[in-house]
Image 1: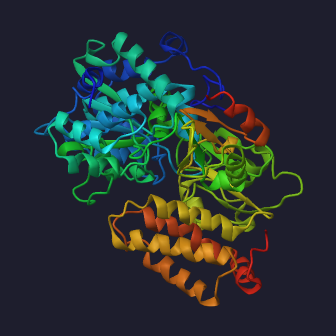
Image 2: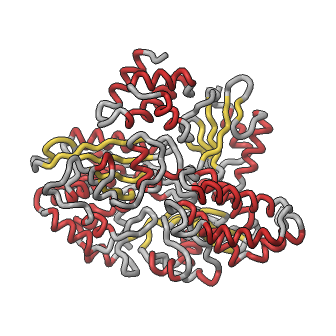
Image 3: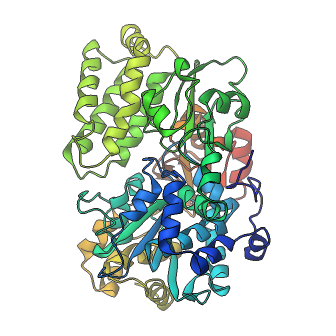
Amino acid sequence: MEKPLTQHFVIGGEPLDLAGYEKVGGYEACRKSLKSLTRDDIMKLVKDSNLRGRGGAGFPTGLKWSSMPSSQNSPRPRYLIADADEMEPGAFKDRILMEGNPHQLIEGLIICAYTVDAEIGFIFIRSEYTKAAARINKAIREAYEKGYLGFNILGTGFNLDLKLHISSGRYICGEGTALTNSIEGHRAIPRHKAPRQTESGLWGMPTLLNNVETLCNIPHVVNNGAEWFRGLSKCKDGGTKIFGVSGKVRNPGCWELPMGTTIREILEEHAGGMRDGLKFRGTLPGGASTDFLVEQHLDTPMDYDSVQKAGSRFGTGTMIILDNQTCPVGMVHNLESFFSRESCGWCTPCREGLPWTAKILAAIEDGKGEPRDIDTLDFLVRSLGPGRTFCALAPGAMEPLRSALKFFREDFDAHIKEKRCPWR
Amino acid sequence: MLSDEIKSEIQCGVSVCPTRHCAILEALQIVQKHHGWISDERIEAVAKFLGLTVEEVDGVATFYNRIYRKPVGRHVILVCDSVSCWIMGFENILDELRKLLGIGFGETTPDGRFSVLPIQCLGACEQAPAIMIDGTLYGYLDSDKLKKLLGNYE
């Protein structure tokens, strides 16, 4: 089984430096792209590869790239941002990729920038990723020295400046337009969806935002072709995926596996199954802001469409496991307290609704819940759902709550009836 | 209020910024690196140096959880309180910190050695429960490991 993304490192080890990366074929895709492929060639490759964005929304990457306006008559500079802010609770795949092979990200970024004709790149990284940041900074320096970044790259006339932007925090920066505001030095509140960022993003210029894992795939698509990339997968979405598992399993961690590997295989074969004495009760398959799936869904293939059909979201592909000795109400309370704290405060339903949700859940968990609280939670799930708020933070926050009320309703009722948490 | 060293660091860091506004966060990060936190006076000094109003700078400073507008200890312990660490028992780590240091979230020891702050998922879920001290990540924590660790920070 091929593992292009992780083939050149072991997790926890030292990454290849530039010379080492070149020795294993690094920057060949960059050379090929800039010297012998046209922008249209690469665009077609990426479209044909069926690569979908790995940041959570799963938008087809080729389609996103082609929404950048044509270079002619375009305002300049044009920007490319790599989203390395990874703050979704439960997600740790981008950290592994950046620590493991920083040059792979930079190479993907250069090819992407060339394809969409962007001349300034940012890697937007959270401040807690200190090790990844140090390794990326070193890799950027090496790439400048070797002429892969900067002016007239490889003598082709293409210019690209790349800067590592270290964030000052807040989960909301994972929202693309809030991230843009943050780079501009504003409070990270989301912007209107129209015009799209590709038309008017950073300082009003055309701006493309891609997730780290998405960009890391690009050199491999260019080197090996779209058909090869599609063949890596067990479903129609191309490529492999870095899947992760956390919670009370025997062997928590992350693994590069074909897109479309089932939840059961990831959980049992790679994460080693549940710890002794514990049973699987449910999972948030794609991070904190996705709906719970339960035992009946274990054979669901982990790909965008299958997980959606099962009633949840693929998200980041990093699963959080709920076992039968952990309180589902307590878990949802933890999640909603998180989302409540991370609301940027810009729109009223989110700013007021999330603390309200968290307070009710705290009361239920403390044995002070009342039967009508369930109705209020149902009301909040509807009121903070898609289309009711300015951005996707609150609707995302409602996904685990909505599904917990559906699958673990008896636990909520037991808390209210017994006036205590049965798990404590 | 701002030393020449800090001023030149800010100048160097923000030379690529197309607007003065986009220099705010980097400037505040630099000041914080030198002084540990950002006082009202330093907000004013940064505003003056960048040619912005105090409100513009403070409005940004107060939004971000990693810009400290109150004094913190010499060492900042960030305790991940997100879901994977909750499942794996971050609350035990908090209890242990309270036992060892006598402080909880948002507090600083009287000798100014440690502050304890909550942090959103550290992206170390496979190593939960995890904390970060002064930018170094520590995972697979338990009481013994935590006790030994704190001894390394004076």
